[in-house]
Image (cartoon, rainbow, N blue to C red):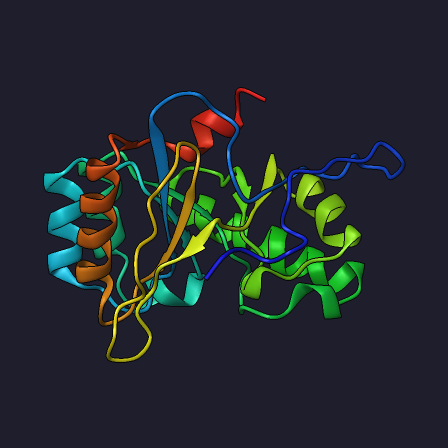
Length: 210
């Protein structure tokens, strides 16, 4: 599954604050891909071990509720590996259906909770379902985000059959979820990246170069 049709890199100077760019693929000649994992409800120890053993600089787009009952899982990943926690809203709504105040509560609210819990303010926003409006882009900037990130491929296994992994290219952004298949999905992505001569890289660092 490819990213949303409207999820290209774009930027406008008409609004204030300046809307963040929308990124579904990173333009880079470096042999890298970007692993992103959403939500955070399934605290799979095998997935955590794989992330730490392989030193995967994954971007974790977490919901505050997913760590409110047990933050130790993500603290271990943050303290012992190169992962980063990023913004995925407070309650996973379709942000494009909310007014400016509602979007600000979701985006800034998640930022504040992540900062209070982990001591690091998110720099990237992934809108739930990949849907957003121009208000989302300006609100993201007001809440400290540098970019709105969608994806190149969603390789999450939702049913019984894994999604076929395409031949990955430099700059691809891979979407996974913390569900019951996350360890297997992550392993398939890492193997496919290696087969293509690519390695995972920190998304925040690359977007920060723009």
